Image (cartoon, rainbow, N blue to C red):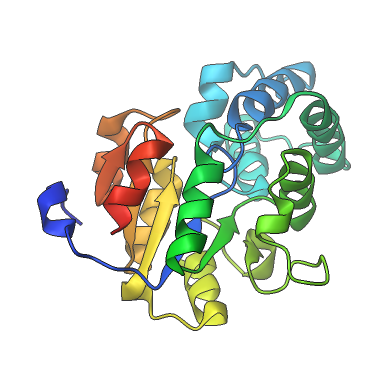
Amino acid sequence: MRFRPLGTLVGMRYDLVIFDNDGVLVDSEPISNRILAGYLTELGHPTSYEDSLRDYMGGAMHRIHEAVLQRSGKRLPDGFDEGFHARVFDEFRRTLEPVAGVREVLEKLAADGVPYCVGSSGSHERIRVALTTTGLWERFAGADGGVGERIFSSQDVGRGKPAPDLFLHAAQKMGVAPERCAVVEDSPLGVRAAVAAGMDVYGFTAMTSAEKLTEAGATALFAHMAELPALLQ
């Protein structure tokens, strides 16, 4: 998909907005990538924070296992995922914050009657911990406090991002055609997944360069959450 000037989006009305979680709803990417880099280095796979952002940001856990095996010929130990998540969740509960301005975006969508949901590479447990810690859980959970049909994880599909499966699954469950969906993403993997799903995708440049998100196929870019509602109209 080519980058399209913002003027072509005026008057556009979406029937569903799908938010990535990490880096879009919650400011978790610096935390999780710092911990991941340190953990991999401890295990004998030297990884910098910048390496982690470049290679793993926006992807599911299997990407880490595949990359380490390909590069070193060695598998990560049993229990790696559990150990990593324990470290991350502990830090989340101490320091995680919502992305600045995202509460106001969700309030605006709700006021305008625009449905929204989560489509994340993270596990359901990771999504729950992150959204609960930041006070965003109730904006996505069902009336009974459960996930309902508004929280979707790569655990729900066979392939994670950059495959389109997760976003197509979310759209199908929400009853909306892909072409009527907008996706909000901050990683090239997520942008590529949305493009493959036939959805418009808005690239958040807080953690990733505009150039990389544009190369991945972003429909438009924004640097601050306050800019997003106007783009979605």
